[in-house]
Image (cartoon, rainbow, N blue to C red; front, side):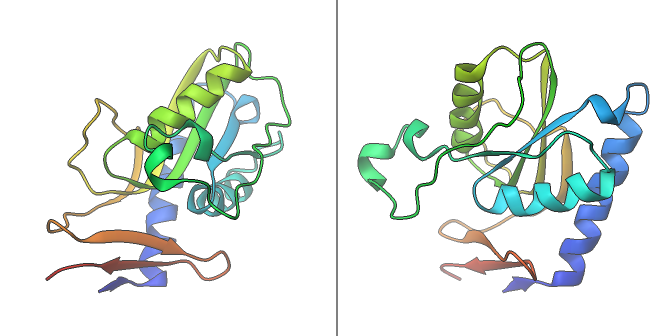
Length: 169
């Protein structure tokens, strides 16, 4: 099963509408955006461009911050994180592709706090599939889906984004 590219574009547009509605009281030019490698960066690039955020886009690779690092081991494409701005006392928008257990977000927050202490962190995700193991909720969600046990959602890209659902039926 796949979620069509047009649905992904609509979900990103829905996220933009939510973000603009929530952040109307403050200046979007003050917002710093960080995408989580890789799918979160792909979504963040689109949001960053459409929201016309002035600061450069930050990119996090949380591979070494995961609590299951000893099980998954080193990934051959581990690239360093790149936060080309000071986060101290700044408002951050953290972006990921799929929110499931919350462990990726926890790892991202751990790494962010190694760079400094932001004023706030809001979370935007393309897909929230529920069943969180940690008390983490997204502030902005493109689409909520329910998957059966054993099913997985994976975003492919970066040009034409597609969400593939795989696993048992």
